[in-house]
Structures are given as C-alpha cells and as structure tokens.
Image (cartoon, rainbow, N blue to C red; front, side):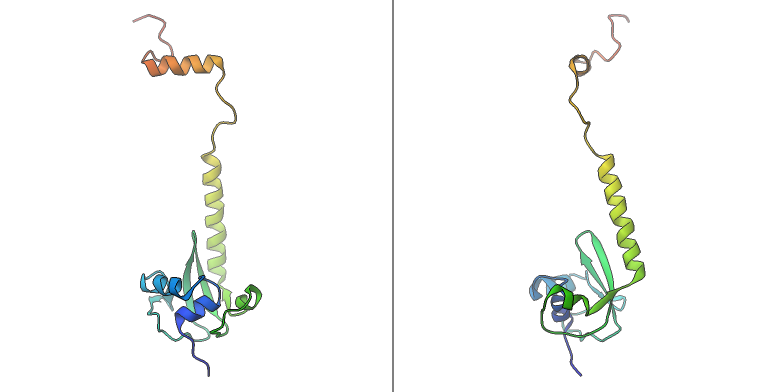
Length: 134
C-alpha cells in the first residue's frame, strides 16, 4: 500500500503549484483533512474529505486515489472527486460575485454640458436648486 503525505498529494493533484506553497497553506490552517486542521506530514487515505482554498473559492474533495507524482491535469483530476455541496457553493458564490460586479459598473457615458454645470455648482456649495432664494 502506497502512502503519500498531504502536501505531496495536494501538489500532485494540482491544487498548489509547488509543495512549499502547499506546506504553507497546511501550516496556516487553510487546508482541512476530514473536518480538522492537519499537519503537512499527515498520510492521505482513500475516501478522506479535504477542504482546499482555491482563489475565491474553497473546494471540498473526496480522495479517490493516491499519487506522489505530478502529472497532467486530466490525470490529476482522477485523484479526487468534488462533493456536490462544494460544487453548488462554488457556483452560487461565483454568481454572487458576478452580480456584485455588475452593480458596481460605472456609468456608460460622460456627463453632458448641463450635468457638468450642475456638478460644478454642487461642488461650490450652491446645491442643485439654489436660484438665489433664501
């Protein structure tokens, strides 16, 4: 039976670019193994649940196979399966980010001449409807 350290498995499964980065994420408490913080030297077992941060998202994956060698992305995806709950959470969060970005878009055009005059008047402290009356 092959044994693989957690940092090496995460690197082989292509969650992290280097083992050093994987090690820092594990030591920083960002990676959870079966619901608890793990150490770098933890041996990975088939069937274990691992939570891994990836950019804005957190993946929750079930270990399907062990490998200590880094191969291509198609072979790396065969090492794990994402849980259904994780996939729906990631899709929901992506949709929320997309909607938030749409709401923060800038106006489509620059202010016209009248709008610029109103802006200047407002910035001077005159307000929008100050026609000299008090």
